[in-house]
Length: 329
Image 1 (spheres, rainbow, N blue to C red):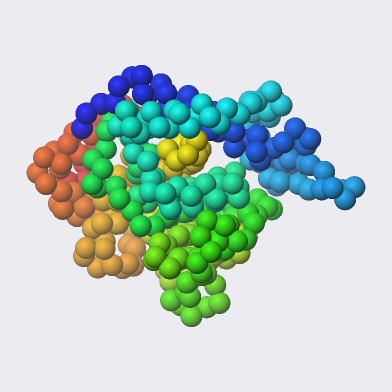
Image 2: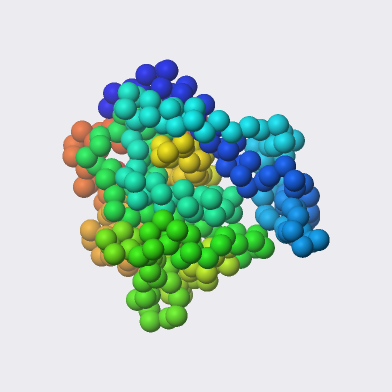
């Protein structure tokens, strides 16, 4: 893969910062105020604003321990949006910088979900659209033919959804603001719950979560923070969504999003690919053995050169964390 020029890397970083500033300003206007609250011995920020009826509304912001949130709480009144400049930056990054923009439907869907508070409520964009953002995260040009998509996959931690005490607007309403033909897809379990939505062109938006023991597989999980949507448990999702990273989707003026760490994304793909190839969603054995077996099987599906490169990356990672590890293949 060819490296992306340093100029475009710097431009992407600036775009991501401005996009995050704009999203923050939209979520937290200057007529409100931040309020710290302690819940179960942990401190969180909430945002209070007038509701127009002599009362107030309260929205969840995030943990007080997050340094990015703490910084923005101090500076939010001074933030300004520069929409036109950010649009020019997106155009430059995609047309000249060699970075990848999502198709229009994907971009509009992610924009609607972001405006509804998905990433504020610690939702994580996974799947192909997340992979598209890794050009900027890793500073490499990604092959365009391998990152086309016809759906959007979103994850949220099950415990987070139950405990934040806040929710997005109705998911169906948000999606129908993009395309009125979006409809909920009946769940395969037969339960009156919806974890995916689809439009007339078969574009699908699916919600996933990490409640994935055998007791919960194939059963939709109720997700109080997802605006009426449920989520399907997915094997190994707890590994994928741990320690996510912030980046930007190159759509319109830039959409700040949260995606899995690229290294976790790669390992997760190896494991899931091997399980789908061999036995679908079979029962998980002891986690360490199952993961190593999955990585071995996934690596076996790579070409020789790709397998050598993966092994080299694993060795480099072991050296960087100063651990003596045995490679799984």
